Length: 366
Image 1 (cartoon, rainbow, N blue to C red):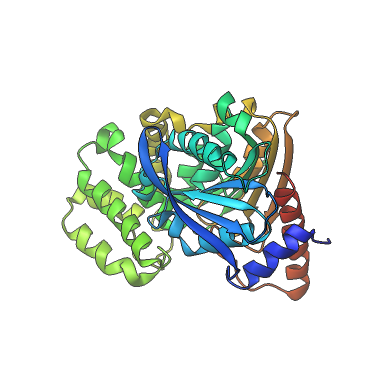
Image 2 (image 1 turned 60 degrees about the vertical axis):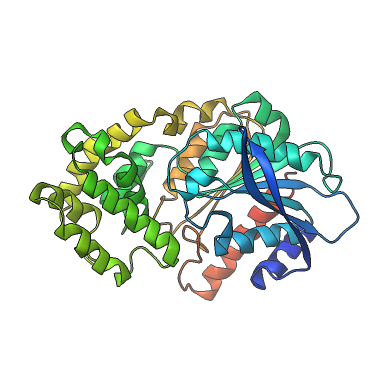
């Protein structure tokens, strides 16, 4: 697979950790009547260039997440104006389902008003939670009029299946069952937001607060939530819980390196918890929105993703209408927001070809 000129520029900067001679501007933009911070990255050229809005996911650093900064700087270096707005609710790890729509409406208008940006609409890139909600936002005709293409990395399609995976490690596609060691960060966020929505767990505020505090701490530390660094905090929180709460806590936050303590208990918790999440926040249900979408859509997912399994992107693809212009790339080069582990050189070469094809499609969509 031969990279286009844009892809070559992206890859050159990406391999340099995002180092490139770019212009950066710190902006304040109006989003739904509230002032938000945003960073604009511009290549050093006098030509009008494509515009992209990039949405971060559920992460405390938000647009300052190091992996995201490398990506957006590489995107700008490819020859694009890239606007990265702050989404405060997502930095607070709250699952605000209207944030993507409001942010894309405002950010796309800001970009299209800039003389550096080529007219005719912009592209949107979303990561993780932001990926799915960038897609869903285009169901709004006003967003679709401004956003010509959506590139979605690591999104979900079925929140109930996603919650089941976070608790049990189990996921499936086309009748084939897979089991992973799930990244606990996702279940900490979900439990922190929605555990008390389950009637029998309504009084377990201590478990919910503890889980969310672990997720926030992981965001501040920038270390994998599966590491043993958090075991002391887990034990301290557990010591303050009742016996009934500890039963739930031991599924949600076992010590690092602990094999699935009780898969049947995890399945039982998932069976009660997953439907409650959707009842508490129906806007998380992408399945009712994805069939209404159209336009240019590029989907990608890391095969080694332990937070949102790659089968969710295959599910997104299956739910999109036939008339949508969709490309899909499942790559072994990445997990969720980081590189995957070591692989055979021939395998790496094949996966590099998949990644180059993905970049060619994504960067050429606007």
